[in-house]
Length: 458
Image (cartoon, rainbow, N blue to C red; front, top):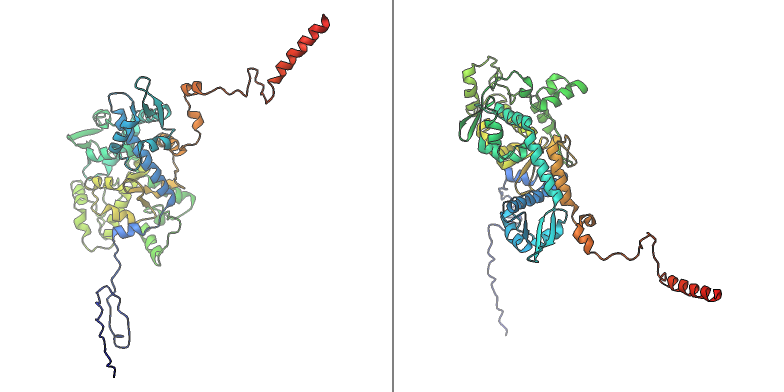
């Protein structure tokens, strides 16, 4: 008689990550669902992308690496050229780590010229003359625009809390603002009737109450005036509004239109305003004393902490207006986000700049395709191109065009030495007639006819 043996299975190890299957015995069990995180990083990853601005950022990233390599090569004392072997050693110092020196030269023939050294007989490279001419033209234009450079620095100082700005912050935005490399000596110290050095790294505006009213008008005011006069909108709708341009495919959540409409109407202290006719509490309308204006701007963060009607929104809107004006003063209307943080203390911005920019996708756009996160002013661009052009932007765009040409139109790049070394094309004779196959027989036949004619004559 056979005995029945029962084998007991070992119970499976149920981990905490194993999803609970509902049945008749656990139908009343409640599971706490984890709330999705809503941080600046998640909002940055889930934002609606703008492919045109992302593409432009990726192109400018490559141009920035080429310019860094030019600075490294031009700083050498042995001349403006170097061997291809040395290029592979110097390229990582410029941030070029993902491509070899040979691939770099083959990929951008309109920027690099490869030649053989006349003595050492090794392959060398240098930057093409057309690219160097564009760089020199940019330096000339920057040095000639002293009046515009003074205006830009002056406006930034007028927006500051105490009328002072640290030079290291301006030095970080030197390329974006179109300032010369020695702007401390050529602009700030030269125009001593406008600026004054308080410290080695702090510059102060001497007279903040300028009679010229154009210095105290923000760039957005021209758009507001145009909307008021051409579209016949009421002053209540336009006086504190900003141009909004959402990217293609942006999903507007229910109720956000009404919130945006109320935010556009919300009054705030404008960037160049110093006469604070009201505090953050709109119920008080008394004018402040001049001595307490700077204290009010400095201690604004403490006042915002109070639960006043629209207090936080007013303060954030002022910060949006300041960043909007700083971007309007730049050459390409774009700035790396991390460099804006160096202006927070001087301009009186206490909020997180990155979160503030992500909160207003219709005004700003952050692209992550470059070396760093770059913020664009959306109203200044259309299909990836700047609307209001300027000479510095045109020169940088021409440099970018040389980069984007790649291996196209390379026949125009041949030097005179290369043209001389080329074998001469035998299809064209000296008279310009095109020779064809079998034409060499004609002179031989002509010689025979000449001999026959001479024999007949004899």
